[in-house]
Length: 134
Image 1: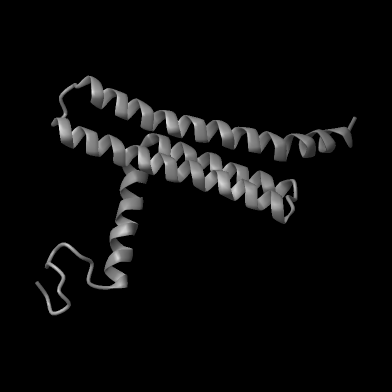
Image 2: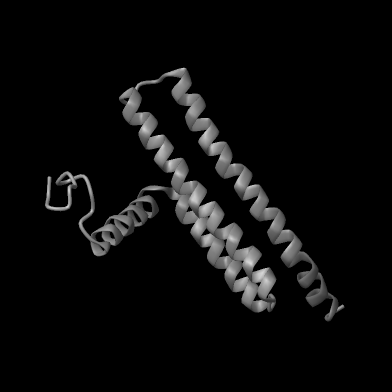
């Protein structure tokens, strides 16, 4: 134990260390998960569309909320998959499959919610924009 009563190697010593570990986790999930890269690309596209269509403050809040919810859920899905794989030592087990399917389902439900919010935010503005040229 160190002078603060923490077990050495088990607790981050300072904020910078905590930040570095968190940053490494974000880099890892982005590098190793194809779906994360797709979610981030979709989020960037939605943000660019938001600028183009001049979303108001509340629309931006909804848009950013769903983008980050999908990214967070994809991260948790990856965590769940890694923990399950570790627990079953990469062997098939029906309960492991169920757990991994449920985690993937949570990402799917969040993505559907994000799509619905996107349609509510963007469709009226897109139709209005198109209507100017018709």
